[in-house]
Length: 168
Image: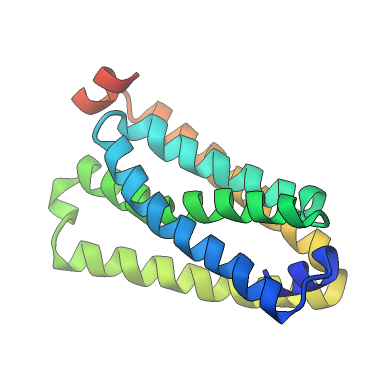
């Protein structure tokens, strides 16, 4: 995010730190908000979090050059990104309660952290090769692909859970 904020927003170190603080604070709120929403509607919440994540990444190159726009986008991005692990882990363990053991939980965390590391590496390569705008659009495309794949899996899973039916 810092290279994008430097390049697109023209942000210096103080503004970047402030924007990243907004992102982090929104992430904490997103964690709790997503947990609350999941109790009412599991699948719609999972899909909504992924859709908002894709949208925020898509909007960063558009609204990011405007400082208030960067604040708004990073708040939405942080809110949704904070909800992603809660949403996906809840859905996974609700779908397969046997996976909700030490091995399943550990595997989920390892996979999620590995994905962050690989994404960071590929994002950095893309920023240096093609610029921050391309990297943001690539992130939006990957988030959209994750949304499409998750929607496909949810559709194939069949009947909704009782929590989904109540919240749908």
